[in-house]
Image (tube, rainbow, N blue to C red):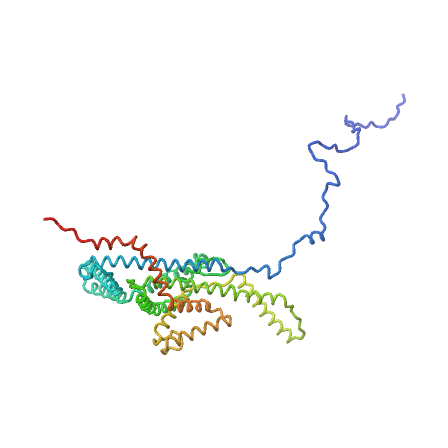
Length: 452
């Protein structure tokens, strides 16, 4: 039997290849995407043409606003004078009632007390209050040895006797100095540095207005605080006495309006002068220093740098370019961040001006050379000329604009301030009598007769 050779059988899986060609059937759920609907890629030149032209340096730099600061200064000055006049009138009615109700005063009830009688009553009342405190201190130390009792009594007298002998104006200056010291201590807290910089130093570029007032009571440097407190205690007390003299002249023209104490008048003057000095500093920076700084940056940006050859020339050019670059960086930083001003020097300059105009023959001794006594008007004119030179030269160590503004406000207040203060007090008299006149009414009532 013959066997035939057959080719080996190829075993395949029981599946059939598709009878149709591979294609994609569009679904009704999917959108039909055509070639013409596909967005074309952007062209670089067209996109560049669509871009807006960048603003120029002059258009990008904004002007420093001054309107809100001017309005805040006007409102703050009117508010300070109104509140000070109201507090003065309230003291008038309260101490008038006290004098009427005190048999030892010997004041007739049919006439108002004079300013001297009111001041004398306040002085004796404060002295009796301090004597009562001393008596309480003695009674609380009965069990202590005599040496400790004598030391405590001596310390009490040494502290409170100068306070009793000081005038009301000088006590107010001490109170303002205490507030300045409290704000200075707040500067020493590292956690509060950002808050103090933002809220207790005035930056014209910040747009804030309330810092015109808070910066008046703020001092970051110890020697700045020390010199301002010394000047405030010296010129503030003298200015308060001059305010009394100016008020008496106005009373001779318009009628007697007794004033128990000049302390509220002095505080209103301090706040108003500080606001005005801060406003002058703000306007001086916004309309003089800042435009000059921007003009310097614009000229530096437009001037091309020149190449120099030679070793010595190259080194010199490198030093000059480095110096100019440093100056440009400093100017740019100053233009971006502005300058921070703080201190009560402007308000003190106002009191200095009032003292110099009121006491032209007085002499002063400065804490800086020369130490020998000089005429007060000569010293004031010298310091004011130094500030004018600082403005013209662009010095930045001191706030010369604030100094000049404070001096101008002091001269204005010396001329017209007493009349303005008298008008504010006169307008406030009905309001003060409505709130504080009940004590005077009660004191003037005749005592009820006792029936037998």
